[in-house]
Amino acid sequence: MYLTVCCMARSRGPQRYFKRAMLRRMSWNFLGRKRNCYGISIRSVRRALQHSNRARSQKKKSMKQLWETRISAACGEHGIGLSQFMTSLAESNIALNRKVLADIAIYEPRTFQSLCEFCKQRSSEMGLGAATLSAPSGVITRGML
Image (cartoon, rainbow, N blue to C red; front, top):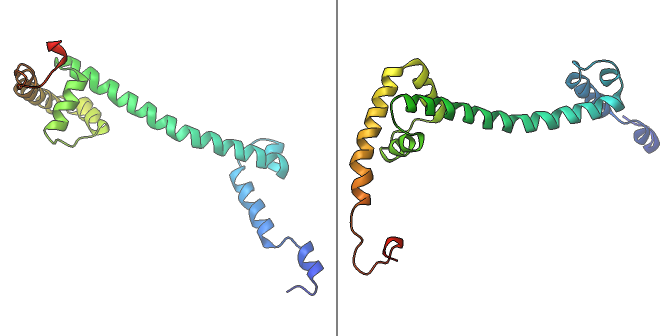
């Protein structure tokens, strides 16, 4: 309880303590004045938070790239392309994401081989047969020009 308005304004309240305590918890692993001095540590913590925010999206991109590389290599062993493999899975309503497919390719090669055989069969059924059909009458395509 404050006796005057002036005392209340002078006292920055408990929020100042908790704010600084939170900053100290976030900067505990820094060295030197970055950890001990509030003015310097707040800049370092803000910069670290910016880097961590950017690194989260970079990690997602790099993991997706790694999974696609692994799946592509495994598909290459079985004689099917990555895009053809993924398209056949999507058309067949097989809902396996890249992470699961990469794990299957590494730890269960026979299962992945059966998936590749299924996709080859599916693409032979659906792929070239649909492309060789003649265009319906009254439709102009690029091949006609």
